[in-house]
Image 1 (cartoon, rainbow, N blue to C red):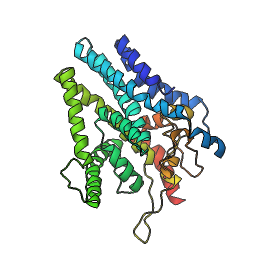
Image 2 (cartoon, rainbow, N blue to C red):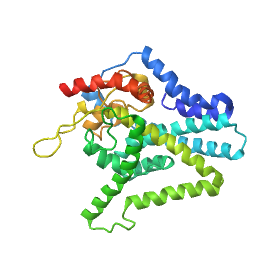
Image 3 (cartoon, one colour):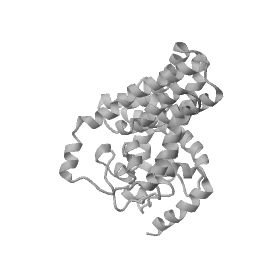
Image 4 (cartoon, one colour):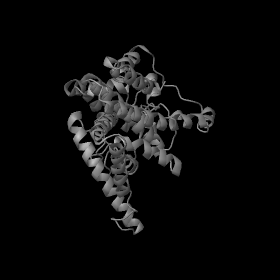
Length: 339
C-alpha cells in the first residue's frame, strides 16, 4: 500500500489533465476519509514476534525499493516538463504530486534508514534526501532533534500557539544552521579542520550543487526551477509532519540544568492503520523517540503517549488552518501540561 502514491504519480503524469493531482487527492483526501471510517489498532506484537520481524529482510527491501522508484518518477517528471506539452494545470498538479513523493518516498524513508549506522543504509538515506535538497537532515535530525526534542532548543519542535507557516521558516532555517554547528563541534572533537573534505556539510553542499548541475546538463537549465519546486514541496511536507509530531509538548528542565529524559509523552501519536502503513509507521512516533534504532515494522503503541484526534494526514491538513488547529489541539496540550 505504501507504493500507491508513487503509482498514482506516474499514472497522473501519463494521463495528464486533472489526473495529475491523483497523488495529492489520495494523500490528503482519500486517506483522511478512510481514517475516519476505518478502525485503528493499539495492538503490539509479542516479544517473540517482534524479535522475528526485526530480522526479516523483506521489510528492508521495501525501503530500498523506494530509491529506484523515486529516481524513475523524477526522470519522468523532468522529461515531461522539458517537453513543454504540459498545461499550467498539469504543471501544478505534477509538481505537487512529485513533491509529495519527494517528501514521503524520499525524506520519510531516508529518515528510517538514516538511523542505521552501516554505510549502505547511510548511502541510500542520503540518496533519497538529495532530491529534497535536505541532506543536512541526516545530521541535524539524528544529533540535534533527537537530543533536544520537546525543548525550545529544537527547531523541529513546534511551540504552543505557533502557526505552522511561521514554524516552516524557523524550522527550515534553524535546522540548516544547526547542522553546520553540529558538524563544527564534531570536527573540533576529532581535531579536524572545519574547511576541509572532513566536513560533511561541505560534502553535502557539493553533492546538492552537483545534483542541480546534472539536472541542468542532462535535461536543460530550465528544469532547475522545477527541481527546486518539488524539493520545496517535499521538505515543507516534512516540516509539517514535524509540526504535528511535537506541537506544544515540552520536557521539563531539571535543577541540574539538563532536560528530563525523552519519554513517550513527548510525541503525538496516531494508531490509525492506513496512515501508519502509508508512512512506514512514522505515526507511532513516541516509540521511535524512545528507541530511535527500533525498525519501523516493530514500532509499538505506547499507552502514555498523547494521541492525535485523527491520523497524520488529517492532522497536517488541520494544521494549515491555525485557528482551527489551536482550538482542537491547545486544550489537549494544556491537559498534558497539567498531568
